[in-house]
Length: 97
Length: 192
Image (cartoon, rainbow over all chains, first blue to last red; front, side, top):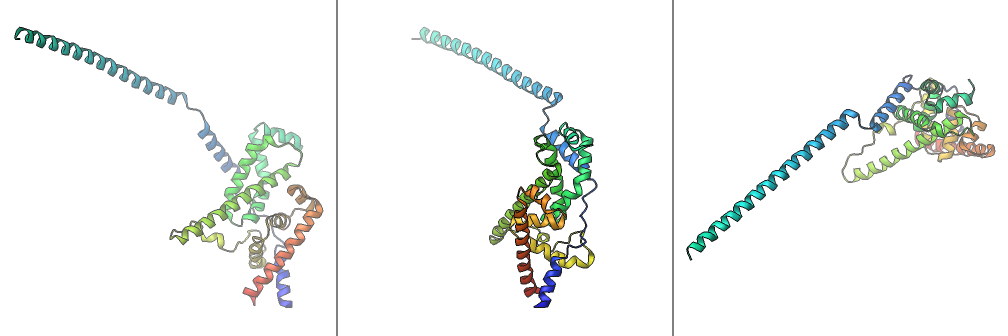
């Protein structure tokens, strides 16, 4: 019983003479790197990236417009062709009742 | 440089002032955190998080307490948040292991902790005491760590924990009682 009590008391006193644990001396540098990294993540798009995105969008729009115009022209030509064909064949039909 | 002027420089984003702050407080923050976390690698990560938190929230510091008090409070908050997160992961790991998935919790978290500042002849006993501290209720653990590991007075602890002096004295008394009980049980199981 005494041995146990002594052991418990000595264990409770085992922090006697404890010295403060030392942090990494590079803590400031490590913290600043993390802060800079976080800042870069939050940074708005750079002007160069913005120009590239704008150029890409402009190209996409231009291609679409050209396609639409081409399709519309094609469509119009086809309609004209159909209407000519239809007139021709109805003319032929009229000639040969 | 008086504290008010120093705080104004910190609030203005003065990097040199922040460097000085880190230099002055890093061991205090680290030592307090390691007393609670009992793992060097975790403490290094948390210490950096603490100083990032200080940098980002210094503008909100109202000056109604000492700067050191405020820093200790952030240290305790972040350390306890880390511990809770670690415990949650441990519980998830146990559940996963029941379903045949490997636990992600490293075994080192279960090993004895050797504080680097302990006197060599007390190393083993101190490791047992740190283990017993893990079983204390949170407030008792904080008070005991601040007093015995970080060498703060009861007055300083009462400011940090926003408690009256008698409340801190009561916490310390109950902490020691509980630790005696845990150590007695440990002795019965391991030292007989």
